[in-house]
Image 1 (cartoon, helix red, strand yellow):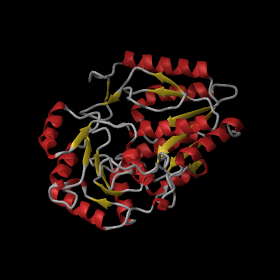
Image 2 (image 1 turned 120 degrees about the vertical axis):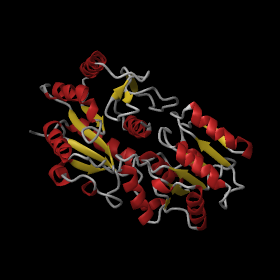
Image 3 (image 1 turned 90 degrees about the horizontal axis):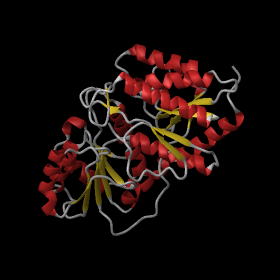
Amino acid sequence: MGVGHVFRASRIVRALRREGLEVDLAFGGMPIPGLDIADARIHYLPPVRAGKEAFNKLEDPEGNPVSDAYKEDRRARLLALFEVVSPDVIVTEAFPFGRRQMRFELLPLMEAAHARPRRPVIVSSVRDIIQKNSKPERDREVVELLNTWFDRVLVHGDPEFIRIDETFPHADEIARKVAYTGIVAPAVPERQDGGPDVVVSVGGGAFGHRLLMGALEARRLSTMRDARWLVLSGLFTTDEQKADLRRFADEGIEFQSFVPDLRALLAGAKLSISRAGYNTTADIFAAGCRAVISPLFDGIETEQITRADVLARKGLVQAVPPNEETPEAIAAAIDRAMAGPAPDRSAIDIGGADKAARLIAELARGGPPAA
């Protein structure tokens, strides 16, 4: 559905290389242009994506339901990679808190790892806010999987901002495995002049068109109407949506679908307008610019609403509720943001990539804890 998790993982990969560890990245989605993983090795599995109609129904790149044979091919390749690499540490992105639909390949990987005489340390890498499960038994399943297979849980957040027990109901049962790393943000960039004043972005773009259109209409109503605007429509924008956006092309607005380094743009910008995704907010804090955010809410996902709520309460952003993305509401939020101070970058620990790498390096050198 998005690409934020890939960029968070890539930041950790680069930090691991700086620690001197060899890294192999098993990549299971569509390749992303400009992805920077330093000199780590990348291994592409046959790609899958979340279904457009049902998130838990996997599709191939052409939109076809993933067959059992396709899954078996992925599973075989992943297990073969494990045998060749023979890692000291396995890090799973989101699993078992998320990626439940990938159990067909991840559970066999866990079993293969535990069958080794000297097994690798197994680590779950998870963002700061856990998605609320509609079925309580799923949370119990997470605890059971962690206690069966995993040695550590790296929570990529600042406990002074939000703790895992605020969004995961059984956090006390896994507390001994948990370590906080801080937010996995990019390096703080040097301020650059000559770029856009306002950057509007919606991550991958799958669920951001309404916000883009609302922001473009809001421009005319706001104090930033004469500023230089750049709109990033996302990799997953449809041709029909692009045609909608082109209606504003004669107003001097620049449009791009994607940039590999958002924080470099934000470093020279006065304002960011965006969703409330993990990576986007990390980029905002690294750049230190003012921000208007409107969280994604599709009736299921709660993570962005929680993040926007906490950020707004702490006075770090101006938030627009997802059901109120009108031009008038967005324009009012823009004016409030520009009238106030820029956010205090020191309010949140954004050194998560380096700390995560140090923790993983310690685990790699120390081996798995005693049973």
